[in-house]
Image (tube, rainbow, N blue to C red; front, side, top):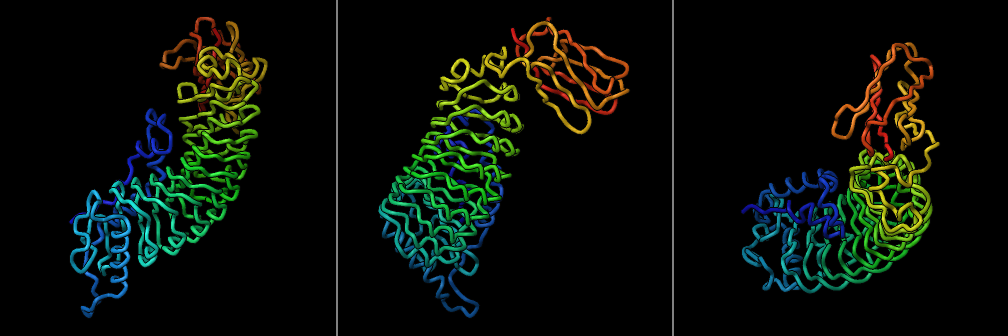
Length: 449
């Protein structure tokens, strides 16, 4: 019998379960990338050979018997006769053929997947007898009571899904002992108290999900120690305090969701170093101050939600990088137009002043800057460095790739300034490419109406 452990939650359903239905418009490789190693583990488990609990001499393996006993307790404690699927349970002399169970060849249980299977009641205290367990998935059932602290004794666990149940009480700080965990999901329960800072000991974790509970307190700064973390769900809780600067240490982070809390203070400019970030949700909080221009450094970002906060000031020109992406900064009365990003992208409305110089393509070689961006009037001034003595070609295109302007020079100075006519170019986002025989730079330019 083939047992499938590889589909507890689809990417779309996962996003929706964490209150991120807006991800439906985004390529959901964000979460899938965080699970690449995890899915490899599931494939390995699904290929494990079912077998009876016998040792080489043919005698019953006592450890496999204790696995059997723990599973019988789980069946009885969670109303097994009324599960959606209880095929094989309590039959035979081995649990290795029971629905949702995966075993090693020696009969030891390494995987349990009973997600969405109408389990009711509470988890029994004998689960730590499953000492070889790597996957425990009871997502989307009707389990109640507290999360057993002694699950922390399952030190081989790599995937732990407790989400979408009715668990109450606190999240055990003892889970810090589960140092092999790649994924911990306790979302969509009724948990209270703080998120334990001790979970920073889960240094192999790729995904942590705490969303849709009643957690209070602050985001643990110690989470900055989770060097392999790729996905962090904190949304839909009662978290307070500021966003820790330490999160900028999460160099592999691809998705940070902390919306719908009570977070205060400013958005840390240090988040701009998270070069792998694909989606950032900080909406529906009480964040204040200006939008950091450093967010423009997040060149892989596809989703930015800062709506419904108390942000103020102008909209940084660097955010023009995200025109055409999924961006929402509305509901901030202190921003121009209350946070009208569409107006910013179409006309430069609300940007941080036309007198600034927007150095959008700096480097040790060819450097290009536009003096005043968004551009007002019929001409823009482009400054080029790093091409002294070389010919240069300036090409201006619309977002559809159509050439709307072009000029060239035979020999650039050490600091070459050229005025480019843009009066006939359409308003909105334009792409300026400056090329020498050896290098090329493209920057985004916003032209006002």
